Length: 133
Image 1 (cartoon, rainbow, N blue to C red):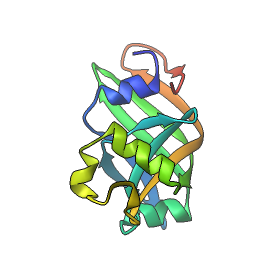
Image 2: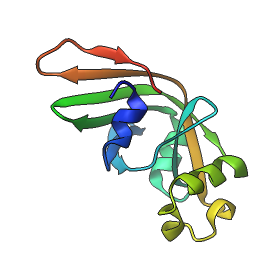
Image 3: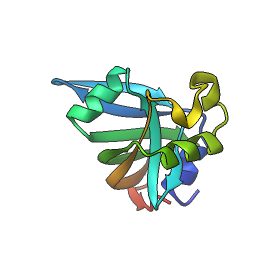
């Protein structure tokens, strides 16, 4: 795996860390896609994670596989366009089980990195920057 996108797609679950006041919060995510040369994710506007991201758009992602782990640190922005939502449902039909209205669901929202740095870590080698996609 040569890119952050390939690394994350190889895992069923990765974790996103946000800030809630002065405390860190981490939760599992499973959806990622490439759109407009950006890494995109999705969430629900009723969740605490959405409120945290609106208040502080700085996040870090962590994922692990084959004795190496990936961290992506960056800043996000929201994309509430129907086109972004539609692509998410095209790429993951499983989302329809959660959001039966598909791209027309008003609680469903996508977000993407506006800036990010991806780094691979291991116990045996120095950290290495890798491209996002």
